[in-house]
Length: 272
Length: 313
Image (cartoon, rainbow over all chains, first blue to last red; front, side):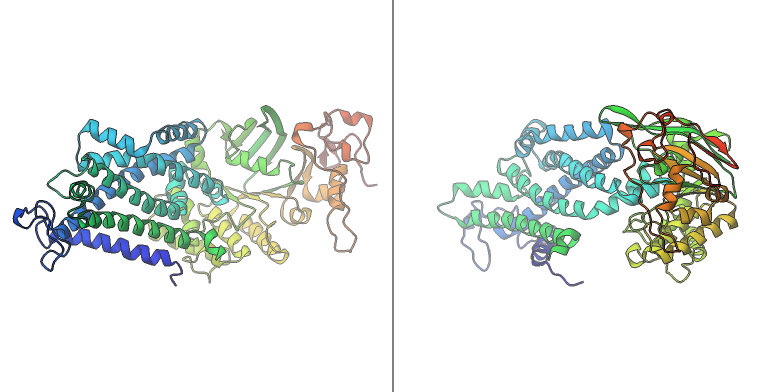
């Protein structure tokens, strides 16, 4: 297959780089990301510390790498929670229709009425800060997103003749959902997953920025941004590196999502 | 034996309950064939959906549909699932959309088997291959996808799937309407052949009188949700009595080159059906008495619901 979508290629390359950096950081970083070396604090980038050091003398490159793994794992679990509960919920609403459908969708409307990030802040503030609660808080807000998109896409498939044909073959609602509906809406879900993944990374950065996400000493991009604020005039690069990391991660995933949509959506494909 | 007794269906439209089907009765035995003929909106497909238990939500059904002593209308959904595909198979009008575009055809042919029997993937595939051979697709790989097949081939796939569990009855709703004329004859021949071979009962729904006359033993002519004429196919076509049947017959292109004659007017909207004979507003032989509902009465060897039937001398 010829790759006709440029954003798909760029997005895939950036995302793959992110994932491999996070993977490498689990086994190896130039320095231990939590090793304090006060003597060499706030060092400018140099061959020994390519991205310099922070106010405690920690190696910024190592922290960025470790931060990638924490950001990605929070986002991954959040999306797994959101899709894992939202997709079955939406599929169920679409299969049953009627008041079950109405109830589910009004529930989603209610959830959308609350600003996601603020409520995530509230949940983590109540449940206690930490990576685990951040994952849950972000994940909970992904549930209605996935429920709604699954439901609307699934409703369209339910109206198709081959679903009626499957009914005449004797398949029940669950069988039809698994065998016929989900495979037909998979492209929509894949695209949504990449988009929610990007949003989850932003949310995770936001939560750790205000100190509710991944806890020190383990590094996170949001935390690094917050720390860098104090030294913004003495060492502006300290804010630049985590900022660029967040931007790149989100940009990469969004491009990937856009590109996948171009490739997977036959309506858009025909237009080009 | 599949027995439809006084079947009625009412749909809820704009807050009121509107009858779309009333008083439909017929008996379909194994090895027997019945045709339902009529224009769009005559209630043919509704009858098929009622038998399959797949009426749209909000539809109210009356009467009985008895399959070997069990009333299907009284069955809970779970038990109805065990009837669909296993005891009664169905073939659809549109082979282009009746197949899942993402599944290989072999898997779709085997679907009813996997639903109703605990067969292994290998057994299901082997059976799917035999079924495809039986419907004349022996040279087509079961791993092909629907979009790689022609319309006629897809309809053969749909038929193969409907036959997978060797059902006792097959409901074919306009199985040839979406196909080329040359392919239509092949598909009809295949259906008749399979019905004769397996001894299943065939309910053929169509608007095409030619299709009916070639394929089925008994015919029911439907208009606006009611049966207007019924009987053995040869009897009905040899001595048609209802003006609607005459009109339907005149509306089809004939081989002798006579121009088809359109039936003036339209099938009345179910919301505004006349109180008596629903065909009265379009009928050339209408009389005052047609404002009351005509019963089905014997005309020679068959039955007709008309006060002023046109009986050929």
